[in-house]
Image (tube, rainbow, N blue to C red):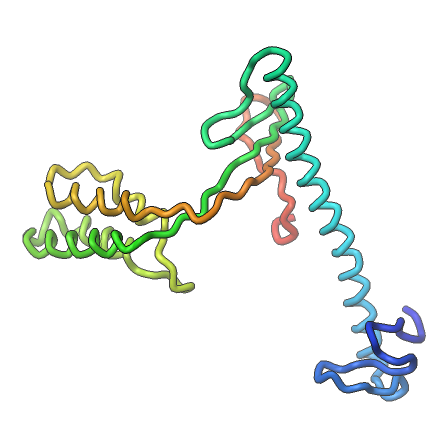
Length: 210
């Protein structure tokens, strides 16, 4: 640990700025606070370097996958990649995999409320009993979570139920019409396995999962 703090932003030499923006003479800052401040700044400095390296790694990964796609298409007239731009590459021994996945950010338009009204009417007509579980599933799908948002997975999951009822199908059509694709984001994912018989394990680049 150093004896004096390094200058930060516009703080004059010999002072430190506290959480309230006040300038405090270095001599008046408790030693334990100085040690804590230095450690936190050192960890953040290292983390910033890692963050920049990860950003560069991600950018380079996308670029190199795209370059391979272009090369194969030009040289062999072969298309590398699946629907919506999803691409998976594997090492020859089947132990390593690189995937470029396109994720969609989905929201719902006003048609969703029409679907909810149709389902409410339908459940009023149905008697309790065999349909009680389905009603619970539907009602939970339309509940907002802790962040005040609807669950896209639960809403879209309703369409998997094959129910031969005109009003149900009408409600499912309304859900389909309500879907809005707000944005699409590309993800770079790495997977490993010891042998081709084992299941894939994602190589975590998340600090919380490291």
